Image 1 (cartoon, rainbow, N blue to C red):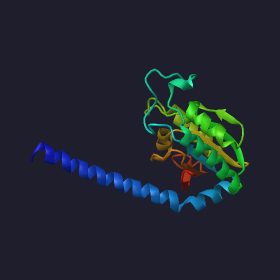
Image 2: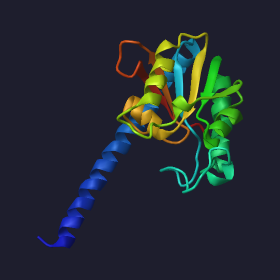
Image 3: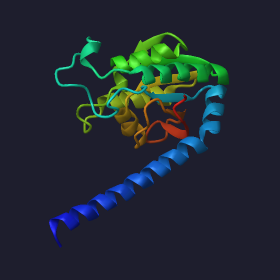
Image 4: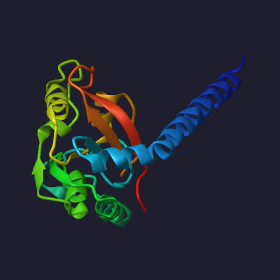
Amino acid sequence: MTESRILSQVARVALCVLGAVLIATSGMATGDSGDGWAALVAGGHVALIRHGNAPPGYGGDPPGFKIDDCTTQRNLDELGRQQARALGEAFRSHGVRVGRILSSPWCRCLETARLMAVGPVESSWALIPDREPSVGVRLLELKEIVSRWRGPGTLVLVTHAFTVRALMGFLPRQGEITVLKPRAGSPAGVDLVGMIETPE
């Protein structure tokens, strides 16, 4: 078999896998949004939110970035800022009471949390992916935070895709809400209630 035919077959398989993943995650997001909002309104749940649109939309920050200098990081664009404001409006229109809001200290997360305007924003390093996944110190701290939440209201966590993947095993879209129910006995410290699509 020629190299070009092998590459063509590999590309076809990759496209099929990608399509299946997109269909599965899309169905989960739209199918469970009603359950998700109901849980958030009831309180005692966790809203794990990936920051709004920050081009190019994947990967980390440019080489040499500084945590205390937003100009060196990937940041929200106008769409990302619009998504953040829409997230806050969706929380208010559904009557979600926010008990606490924590954000990764990265600028795109802090800006998302602040533009939501649902409460005072605190910064937490537990919402940043571990540099060494085998150690998982931040992930352990995050599991403790989510498993202990009982309210009042909803705990809002604004974070990164890789933090969500480390906790829940999948990558959310930018601005998407993962709704969780704290449960100390589960491996993640929470159970998945549903997904809420990025508001427009």
